[in-house]
Length: 353
Image (cartoon, rainbow, N blue to C red; front, side, top):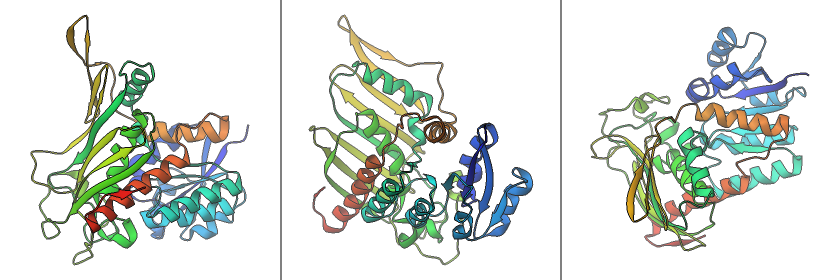
């Protein structure tokens, strides 16, 4: 059987650090094209991993190759929808890094293009695929948490601003700061575990207090391309609340820089039968049995390989016909939430979705 032919568009940090592992370990796939506006990045991958791949600096030229079955988009945020729509028009399936898009209109355009082409669109949701999340999902789907009626989630950094002055901190290219960068991860994981209720309203605030602060205690500060005296017109902290159609609520907090003790990623969900805490990839469950309160901490699961398993699932879908765990409507709802929080922060009012 011929291998599935893939083109990777954007060959920088997220490609090498999070996507490369799948392409080196999945025998069903052949990377046949690499594209980056900085040609040396594409050439590096060709020289070290994919010697038979063609190298491009213009994604439009890559998409002309009719033998390519799908593309993996690892570019700055504002290009996600532009490249995805072009890929669908060229007859390719699309896997794309988060966030889905930088506006609701762009997310809708991606979905419409996928449907028109009859192709699969999947956005990176790696935290769904780590082992603690998979265990938690099975626990919840078995009814062991009862009704999940509220929760909290966040990704807090003390000092971890990525690519300061570059596209990460330039709203026109990124869509925003830590809310759209980090929020996608834990908001999505929370809503997925909750059973994908429909968001109906949000309220939020954003702050920018550390644009002139160059201190760092996080490797994430080294991510992205920094630019001295570049643009910083996004938030460094966002907080808010999401309300859902089933009456549940979710509190959120995401920061690149904030005076806290240390970096922290978490999802806390509270149900009528049990509660759970997913913190920095570790899972604990809080329940009771025969009148006794119990804390359960699974000990033989870890959080590794989420990106690899997410990509592998995409190829299960497009090659093997598996049912997708991610649906594009979930991505549209995500961008609606993020954009509405920014609007709420701007106006000081709750925004109805």
